[in-house]
Amino acid sequence: MVFSSHLFVFWFLPLALAGYYLCPQRSRTLLLTLLSYLFYGWANPLFVVLMFGSTLVDYCCGLVIAGPAREADGTFHALKPGGTRSGAQRAAVAISIVTNLSLLGFFKYFNFLADSVNDIALLLGAAGPLFSRALTVTLPLGISFYTFQSMSYSIDCYRGETKAIRRFVDFACYVSLFPQLVAGPIIRFRELADQLVTRTHTLEKFSRGIAFFSLGMTKKIWLANPCGNVADLVFNAEAVSTLDAWQGMLAYAFQIYFDFSGYTDMAIGLGLMLGFVFPKNFDSPYRAASITEFWRRWHISLSTWLREYLYIPLGGNRRGRARTYINLALVMLLGGLWHGAAWTFVIWGGIHGAFLIIERVWRRRAPSVPMPHVIRVAGTFLVVCLAWLFFRADTPTDAVRMLLSLFGGGGGGGSALVSGQIRIPYFLGTMAAAAFVTWRVPQTWEWTRQLSGRKVALIAVALFSSAALMTIQSFNPFIYFIF
Image (tube, rainbow, N blue to C red; front, side, top):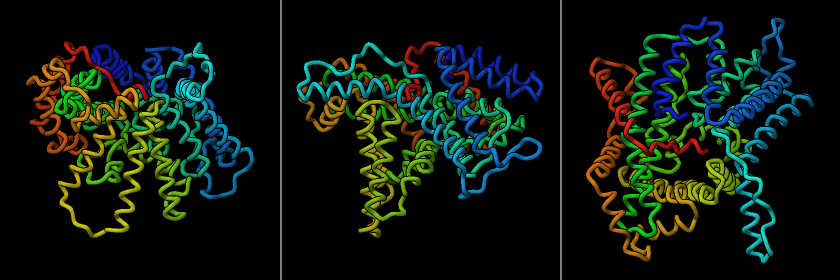
């Protein structure tokens, strides 16, 4: 079930909000958990079983870890950071990590690893594939998000950075909360712990939630979907001209930005309507003046997770320059693989890792070389767009073909049919509007802090026009649902 669908907007959301606010306050968390399981299981009820199993394991591991920290009333306090941990506590956090990574590894990477081994075997002269593809594993929606989120709970309990939660239903709500379940943001438990137990519901918070949801859906329907149409036409073509290749690359850059940024706005808005305050996940990343700054602005919750649970445990920048560079490269390669089980994602992560290292070396050797801010922003955006080619392409060969086409080396003159389809006023106007919003319009986070009458009117127009356009659009994917 996607947010920008008739089923969600006109049926699930109104009924969920009505049931939530009519329900007694003590039962709202349970109802919200059940609604979240219904939302998640709509596509495939078996996915619910998998998520419930992961939730149960991490909840029990949290109890074992927090055992010595139990109070007389049954609640817990946080363990002492850096203190000695028992064998049972070490085993519990290990079980949590292994269980979650095993689920993620099997369901997300089995097909990829089997195909990779078979390809290598054939290259080395094997008579046939080593692994039969009689077993094809279906990827559960959002497994990359909820396994990272659930695993962070047991790790934080073990580190003493949060206290374990007492009621299972509260933890189940945290893992399954439908606004951010299938595409983030990845919310660490300590950011939501108090709100799971008690949260406030105000008209101001609810109104801002409607504003977030409306503007997020506008980004998705009015900007991401048309740009996605252009990107698909270009990337799926046999050959494209240089101009078409540039338009397709920029179209995808805008599609993925407004698709994910729009989804995140809607998720934050839904959370506010239910009394939750989620952390900021985007900070105008295309305005970044370096790749380092880009990753402070893009998908902030993932960047934070990778830094706290992977980069820092690997040693961060505390073990010398060479080790720092290795850690950066490893984290970005794994971050690329987290996005998808394909070599294209690994290459995408490798490109970003390489530029993070280059920037560190440059700052160390030439810290005072002046460069206009607009040039640095444009250069960063170009690098990000070129990397997106590998993120979007089906194979590395397709990405290289698109890369060559950008500079006139595609080996063909392109298709007049593709050019005629993508250079219509609607698509060109949409891309111009996307560029204007990207670099000139205030962020949703800041713009919705105070809602005037004029803003409310604009929000209403955005919501109703998006709902109307949604009824005639046939192209309406969410890119991050496949991760």
